Image: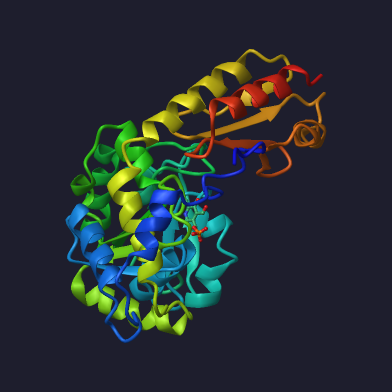
Length: 342
Ligand SMILES: Cc1ncc(COP(=O)(O)O)c(C=O)c1O
């Protein structure tokens, strides 16, 4: 049945297709906590090979993969460096402090990018006993709160060199890394200079659940212990892993369609008088704010009445996300909803 709600809140709202569900129900399964679910093992090896990493760990969410990575990389009292817009800083429930006793130092621009000079400035002097010890750099590609910004492999590599030369580890929150790979014509193997990578299957790739943490064998075996401690060990999770395998095999290249839709939405928004600012659109996320004379709540409710869902990121910024369940009809509804707002 056709979905009449135009749900632009997030690319996490997608529902598995019939083909994905078929793949799930046919999957051979076992008990993954006991280490014998063949489909989970297959997914972990497909994903780690894609990124040129030794090993992978299937987890329930991207929050968990990030939190496990931080927990294994850092000791309590240490500090990590990231963008002030990053997911780990804004949207993981204070988990960096709660789970790992780690504090955060931030830098970079309004688009979620962080630059070599930022990292050099933010690293704490090792000889200063007053300072927390810097131990990890975390970057997010694409940057969600930055507006779907693609950081590019060249910049990410420059940051790797600085992290490395200062003895810091380097983690990628790649919840939407495939959007960046498709947009910038990169290959997943280009990313193998990270110590650890988190990828999400349940965003643009359309799986119902699941993220993977990728790293070397030793790191992943430590991560497995932390996953258990955090309550993330799953049993017959092969059914979910099968959705992930289907997503990796079928839903990466089509992300460019989502990016094209986001560009069309950018153009539409830029023609409207009540829009004050739109962040540059590079992938499937459109962040915008309205002029002071206009209420974000009124716009949100005007669209809601027409069965169009978007998200308020904070009191100023609103977000529209394109994904594989958005059809042309939803775009037309959105455009009409925007045109009839005053
Ligand atoms: C950049 C980024 N990282 C991590 C996550 C966390 O993923 P999950 O919702 O699976 O915990 C999200 C979720 O939207 C995200 O946007």
